[in-house]
Image (tube, rainbow, N blue to C red):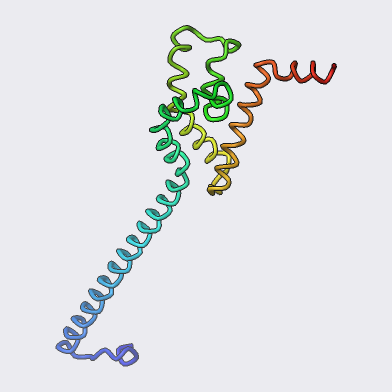
Amino acid sequence: MQKLFGIPSDDADQSGGSDAFRVIDALYDLEMKSNILALRQERQRARFHKSMAQWAEYWPVCVGILISLIAPQLREFVDAYRPWGLWVSFPMVALSIRPEIYMGSKMAAYLPTALVYLQFPLEGLLAKIALKGNVTVHGVLVQVAFFHGLCIIDLWLLSGGLWQLLHLVGH
């Protein structure tokens, strides 16, 4: 067996041979630890990039927050074009001030103001959820237009637009 592996037979040579095996084992252990460390670092980088990519999908919410910073000035501007200016730019606010939607007096006082700031971040979040990972500028714009369109149709129906249309068609 000693001849097969090239291990010398005398005791002096065996101690030198075992030292060589210890050195090889130590080098092997160092290389394995180095490889494991490199693998862990690569996995951490991959997890970090995946996490950043997932957070990057929330950009519509961030844009909504940025728009909400100028929302009061925008509301003052569109207030001159009532009711359509408010309906088109802040349909959730317009819905919240409708008398058909009953709520307590405190809620009726605070909700429209809160929705001025919350409408655009909420629309961004709803668009992100609706797009399910395929968050593109075009997709978000379509989703926001869809949400605004639904609110505008609701406002039109609440204001009696359907009855006016039916009355015009009937005559």
